[in-house]
Length: 445
Image (cartoon, rainbow, N blue to C red; front, top):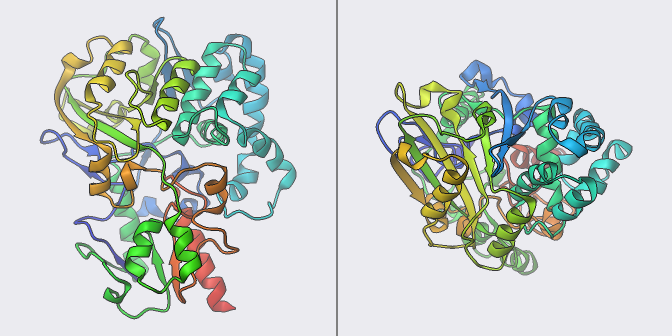
């Protein structure tokens, strides 16, 4: 077994580095991992024996408002519902039911598209998740707090909130917050990649870094090649192996908006006006449902909102190893049109300052990555698209092309296992796991 990596270190979107000042450990891309806890694949791995330690913040998520209050997504459904005013009973009934169903439906939700194993348990999830986030929020909830909480969750879809199935991300992330939590990795995200590598080597695997593959001919002879590549890159390295119809389908594959990310070294914790925010490592900064939806709609139209929806992480509140004594790290990103080179630093910091007056005075240093920078960092982030492709109704279920086996290609022994294959983006390992199962099944047959 051989893993070939073009970069100096393994990890892709799960890497850490001192991006700002010495001693300040930043996660280059991802930090919060609800799907690691919820993934059947990760559950099967003894990563704790190889150095992985997950930290669960007191609350998975905080969402502040302009009046100086915040709503918290707590691990406990009832505790969350108790702060939602007129929507307390609705949240407890609808989201509570979905969260309790997670252990039963997880393999259907995170598997390839097929007939479900537990159709009756899956129905409530499916009926809610295939809607638009705005439609679901406005039909389920009366109050602005519950609607805004759901809008922030659903905005992870990087779709307009008026477009189905943007609700699936809100439902899924809310379920995971209650059923699994939203943990981070002690010492930085790189520790998870290192633990995976250590376990892989313990099984007899080899890893080669700094080895760029420009053609499949560059690889040693193998019975199976699993490509963690976007459709564009798979076409590039495959030459004429793929066949005209499949190649054309990959060339039609669509990517969504990109991301603009800022990392900060801070001289103290973020001074949130709503003190509840210090209980969460993740803060959704964007205000009301209407404001979040307007910003995401502008991005979909190719514009850069003045008040973007900002996804904010403050891991050092719960993991002091990430900064020198007294210091803190934080990062944030917002969505931008695919391939954008516009600097969104001032707009992101203004949004944070809006809910945390004095934040900008805490900044010691910053590191920024535009959508183009993200693609240069990782070619799988085409135009800064960190979800591996637009997650609309068509591509959510048929990525990367319409085939009975989405991981197989027309080229014998060649498979795709990136987030452009089911179940899509997220740190869950299921794309590679399901592709590997496909390889074993086809070889056995």
